[in-house]
Image (cartoon, rainbow, N blue to C red; front, side):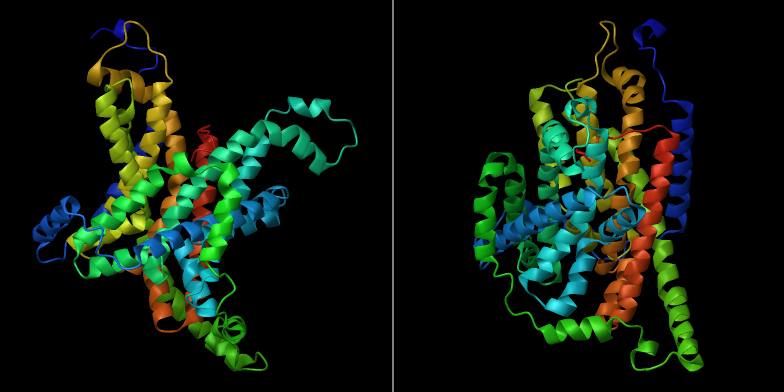
Amino acid sequence: MTSSTIDHVNRPPRPLARVSLSFVGIAVFCLIVGDVEISTLDPWGEMARMVKGVFTPDFFATEHLGGAILNTLSFAFIGVVLGSACGFALSLIFRYPAVRFFCAFIRAVHELFWALIFLQAFGLTPITGILAIAIPFAGAFAKVYSEIIEEADASPLKTIPKGSGYVSTLFYARIPDIWTHFKTYTMYRMECGLRSSAVLGFVGLPTIGFHLETAFSNGNYSEVSALLYLFFIIIASMRLWMRPRLLPAYLLGAFIVLPVGADISMTNVTRFLTQDIIPGPLRWVNTIDGNALDSLGHWAWNLLYREALPGVVNTVLLTMIALVGAGILTLVFFPLISKKFFGRRRRAVGHIFLVVVRSTPEYILAYVFLQLWGPSMLPAIVALSLHNGAIIGHLIGRYADELPLRPDAPKGMNLYTYNIVPRVYGQFMAFLFYRWEVIMRETAILGILGIKTLGFYVDSAFTDIRFDRALALIIITALLNIAVDHISRIVRARLRLKTNPDIV
């Protein structure tokens, strides 16, 4: 092949290449020191039973299946709409540092952690599931909505009379131009809300996830596959039934299905807020004297040394491996749906594969692999890499389709290696670093499955009814996530990487 058959862009820019190699080196080191042991006795036998279940789904094995599906939809509808409304209000004042930090903090705490917190106050009531989705989603909506507003075309502002108020300017000169972006992102978050709603079943709320966990525990993989098939159908058909004009009817139905204010004990709420989450050494003292401070110091040292530090180390190790793993799989996955490489039939198969993988929550994927390999980092690495690789691969596949080709462009592997990959590499890195924060959130929460990330210690604290320790560890998790998000923004800025915020 001669140079005339290759576009003038034949390799990623050197800064991107250096950063990529640095992250690969860090991931290799983390993989060496991390725990990736397979501890199950018969992984191949378990895999055979799972494969058999995939081909023999039992749609009649689950009791109250219709109610579980309605609950899953209802939690998602109410939680996402509430989060969207609050997020939009916060986006209008997002320029203030205190607001930005508040939004970063609430979105840094995973929905399952919020659910575990609200379970102690509100129990297994609908308000627990709704708030667990609405609060972190409000932080995400605020960030993205504000970015969409800031990046909107400023030329309509010239038509606004001087002295017009901010709200009038926003609704008459900004919103009409960015409404499509708002709608696209909100639809994407609705899909995320459905995934979050399903996962909330793993902590006892009556969604699909509750029945999935029961079926997994009983080894009934035919029931598992049936539940997952139904969930995939709901996600895949969203474009058909999710219409803005129908949203009021959906919300009304959701409130009918979920009696939001039912069975809430204010005594439990008051005790949780005024006693349970206060650090133990300070809970029963009237004044903070020297002994109380010594006890508090001992409490904090044990928490940081025995739980927070090992949890942070394992969370960072797993995150870095999964980040690079997601990047590698993205480069493998994106050609599956690109017109540059395959015809319509093969692309259809690729689309189905990526839809299934990206629609399955990381928590459920990790739960599946946990049955095969046991509670090491390996199930989480594979789950996070697959899920995020499928999401970014879908975006890069669409991006690659928009690239023009010269008449003498190479074919096959030469086209992939020398033409397409160098041209999409900057956008690929932008998406990957944008997902870094999300991968960190998911890494922490996967500790609930027995993998010793921060979530493992949070779940243990809740199990031992040590809510003060659980809340402190959740705060540490949020601060770690905020730090990673800040580093990601610095890296993207220095490499001049940009993302379209309404599609990530």
